[in-house]
Image (cartoon, rainbow, N blue to C red; front, side, top):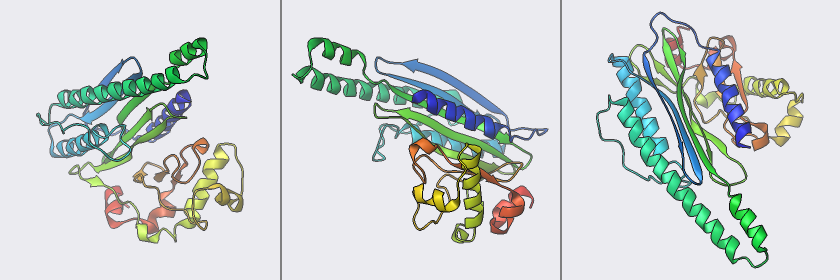
Amino acid sequence: MRLRISILLCALVAVLAASCVDVEQPMATKEYHWADSTAHAYMTMDAELPSGTDKASARVRQELESVVDDILSHVTSYENERFFDPFDGDSDDIEGMLGYYRENAFALIGRQSQEDADERAKYILEDEDFSDEEKAEMLRDFPRWGYEFGLKKIDDTDRYVVFQSMDYIYMGGAHGGVTGRGCLTFSKADGAPVDDFVDASRASEMQPLLIAGLLRYYSEGGYDTTWDELKESLFIEDGFVPLPSWPLYPSEDGLNFIYQQYEIASYAEGMPSFTVPYADIEPFMTPEAKALLGI
């Protein structure tokens, strides 16, 4: 199952990267790659952050460092519990900052996966319904925790830059899941984040566009259906399609929508995603978004 999700992540990255537009002065970045494992868990980090000293780069880096802190200090928590303090070193020390979070998150995952393995072993050894051979086999087949942290620049134009925050985590259950903050857009002028691309209060008026996008997603996945049939299987009320909780983000072809796992569909149906052309979505876009994109 982890392989299936990893393939899903790679496919999404490939689709998103295909929308990148070459520019004369892309935002300079520094990449960080790391991987390690413990007896019952593994962890990887693939991160990319702005490395320039200009105002826009510094602002974007600051915003993304807060994303790193929020995700990694809460990883494995079901109740938004913070497990360690924020990094208090030089904010321009990208490698030092990421190293701090890597070290603490890896120690956390290693410790909790060991506790989980110890608890499972205790129940197995105490269960008199299993033979010694069966117990030995079960002890060898413990589920192995895994965490893959991803933060990558996926688009860089003369007006905006987009970074994708997308992780995979598995903690010994039926399957793992995709987490993160989605695709985050920043103005190249000053580095300010742009979160609201459409007027959320007009979601009801956008229903035809959202429905068409979902039908297109399922059709491209080999599942041709009607809206009357599809809406009965989705996790929505009265056939109303909400806007995704992850932020929308721009590309050359239009605004992109990505729904997280279980947000509107079952796990098996993946992460419904689609692009709405600017010509169709423009009436619902915010003034800030139009200014950013020159519409």
